[in-house]
Length: 178
Image 1 (spheres, rainbow, N blue to C red):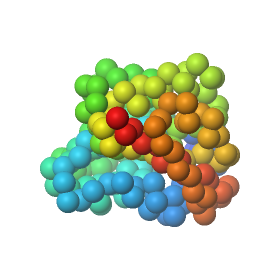
Image 2 (spheres, rainbow, N blue to C red; image 1 turned 120 degrees about the vertical axis):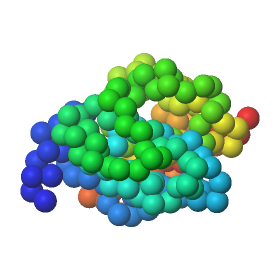
Image 3 (cartoon, rainbow, N blue to C red; image 1 turned 60 degrees about the vertical axis):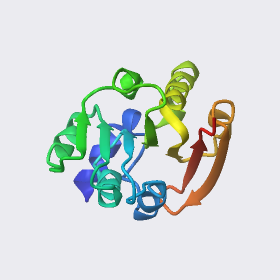
Image 4 (cartoon, helix red, strand yellow; image 1 turned 180 degrees about the vertical axis):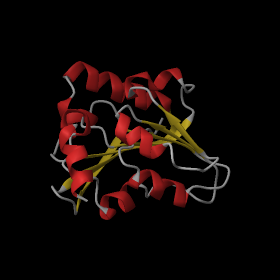
């Protein structure tokens, strides 16, 4: 447990966290995963994989999960996941559009520390995510602060909830309606 916390703290500029997300965040951020139909799901900043494992437990057998992770320690841990629906990509989330067609993704889940991004990089990433979502698709992000202004100019609808976590997390659910 201590070594896991140290791993997060050592990489705080890229993880933005002091520890992995809680089971409450993991459960609620994956609410849009549908085990009744195939989906294309992207996870940006998979970290230690606790949300990844929750996604895989909820996915339809014909769904696909694509995880982006650049931190070597986390990537090495994620490589141990053995599931034919799981695809690990060692690239920055900024390169996500190289891998998918526009309007082809059902759900994007992000644990990226958007508050640490500069404004133009954050705006570009969120615009890219919006362009990848299918009509009716959802982008879900958790942060440790209230930052509605990041999402409202880009997405068609946004909802927030406060999640039990250390520190408390705000979960943003951002929808593409058109």
